Length: 483
Image (cartoon, rainbow, N blue to C red; front, top):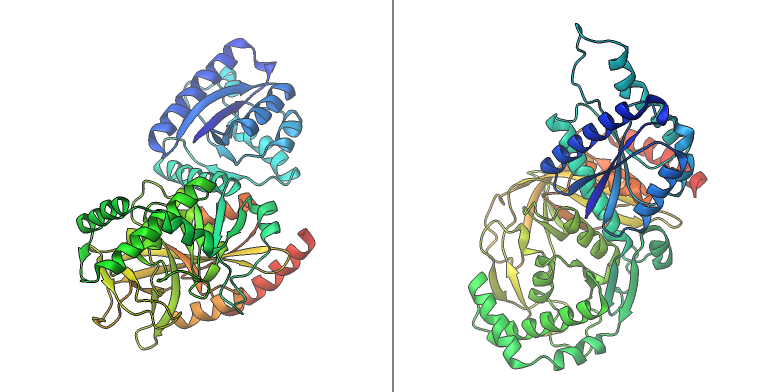
């Protein structure tokens, strides 16, 4: 993915000024590109309505362009931008900066003033963005400052999430867990709004694919397991079955061009085990996953993994499982499917009875999660619109050993505290299924939510339940008017 850097100007200033603007824009683009996770290329100094419209159309149809970064070095009359910005379908960042950090007090003259007009050129550009009600990110500050580069980097990741979302395919192996509300949702609206293509394959299709996996493939994958994880089981047949399931699911996902999937313990006809280790392994490779048929959290898991590629601290499907009310902590886990990218130490392969579902004991990776600041995120369908709820958390090493708990787990302190956070989460309608990420930030997900035009709620250290209740009420009114 690449980002286009564009400078706005006009022919009024003459060829010499425009040449200087182009050189400086190229310099800034190159400097930012070296300091951000995705390449930024200088594209053009645009000076006319036709140039701007062509640029927007070119960006729309270039699959490698993930967004535009626009800066007005000089004054760029914003009526010129109306047609182009009206058709732009890519993420858009308005960089409010200037080439010089300070005013050259002893040398400033009218030539300097005519050339360096970002202070009012960007305000003119900002007006048309507000007038058109554009979704945009505004970053203000000197282009060499770390905070500016960090904000651009974060926005780039959000834009990659936007591009990922618009092309995402999700495969549901079977249906949802019966009678569960929050895992349901409007798949047609999700495709219209978010771009997700969510479709179902029968469990029989997966079983047929599994039957076609050869023993040599399984043996090779089990050898990989032994190199990468600690074997803490003698039940090699259970492990081999998970390898068979992993290989079959990956073949289907690759064939369908899908990057996220779901399953449920209630829909396993013809299978011996719920895919535990298999699902964990696929998540480790970047696939999204959702338990109990939860396709929304599956898609979001993959999107967050795509956003945070290269950061390497970890992102996983997660579930709030139980509380320590005395210590004010949440234990996050799931029956089996927690991604090993968040493991603090080398995961162990273990085999234990599941306790529900009526199938054979499945193999799974068992580990404790990393220590550090993180977020948990939930995407819910409120009927007519979607809401993304993000909560800041701090993950801790569990305060006691849990030798009888045979699942991967993470313990965290939710912000601002356990009871307030739980109150606010329930007020907002947050699901029990979430995405836990040590790499993504609330700002990153808020920018993504703005790009895809959905509601965003942030529960953090300063959140007060009564104020959130009022905010949700006003937000509900605004979104009802909007949709």
